Image 1 (cartoon, helix red, strand yellow):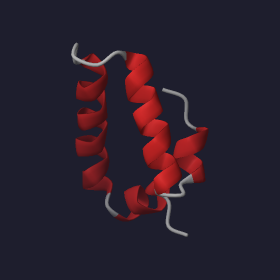
Image 2 (image 1 turned 90 degrees about the vertical axis):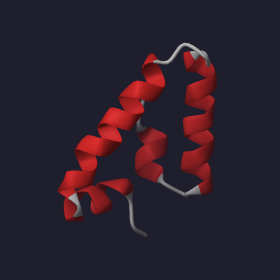
Image 3 (image 1 turned 90 degrees about the horizontal axis):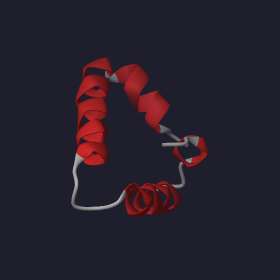
Length: 57
């Protein structure tokens, strides 16, 4: 199974863009952090990503 870490290792230029996107999502004021965290966890479940499920935001 390919994880986000595997992809990041193959596409390092994508890491900075992904990090910037994630940071901007957490800085926005429209959705509370709790809702964003639930969305992040659900996406990790749908993608079957144990690495993303283990992360804490």
